[in-house]
Amino acid sequence: MFQVKVLYVKNLATKATEEIIKTTFSTYGEVESVKKIKDYAFVHFKEREEAMKVCTSSQSYKGFVVN
Image (cartoon, rainbow, N blue to C red; front, side, top):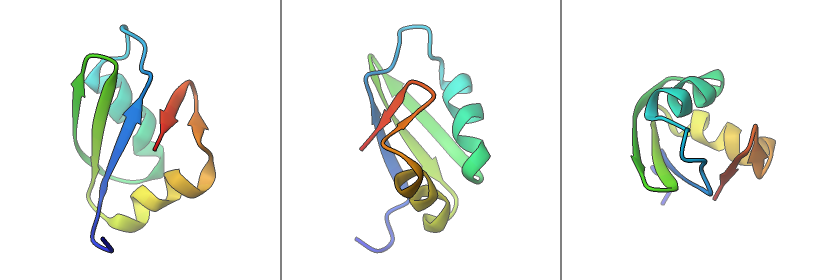
């Protein structure tokens, strides 16, 4: 559990592309990849600390809901 570096992001707008999601979350650190499936996505960060920054900053970020 302490090595998890992937965030599950839900309730995405249809127009939210993988590139938009990557750009948005890159403000917290290096994003290795994004996989969008319908209205949710998995955001893979290079470092766990970077993923944790998103979780501790807010549950909602520019229209994205992070769980």
